[in-house]
Image (tube, rainbow, N blue to C red; front, side, top):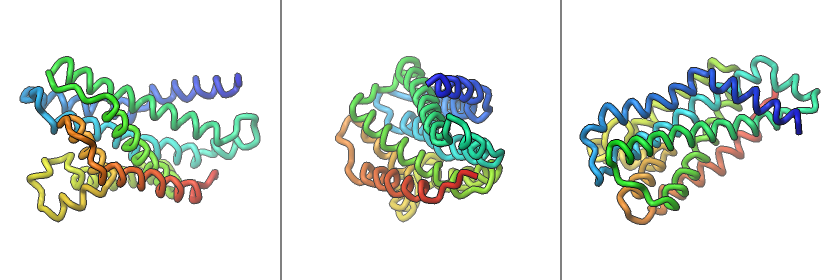
Length: 233
């Protein structure tokens, strides 16, 4: 137990010093503040986009880069001969990345709702969309970490994957400005499904079933492939 507490403390300090963690907190907030001057109580676009961006940056960039770097440096292999098993490190990392995601999203909500005057989301519906979306994007990040040979390639794969998904998911421009075929395809990406679910939340309506099913399928299928593909060294 002491070893696990010490591991968590060390990993927390490393995460706080990680530039990617700062970017995940500040970039979505910066976008919200820059464009938030026109936000209204009935706005259903900007906050869902910012929240989706924050979750996507952690899941597709920070998480896979960290895990692939640990494997590249032999951290996971060395842990296999200590009382702290490699699985413990992965669990701690997932929990810390989840905490970082929660902090980033809470910061956006405080600024968006409390400062800029956006509508508050329905808590339970927001929680459902957030958990499913985070699970889907983290599972994709785990797959990147499983397949990438080192931290640099995981970083590159994450960036290369993030921008097309962000475009298709409606994070770079409103969906109604996109060609119909691309907007339709984007709804079946994890970022697009999450953004649509959050849009439903802020619109005050019921959560649409297709985006929820899409995120659940990504979370289940991709995490299974990642678990079977992951290498400890």
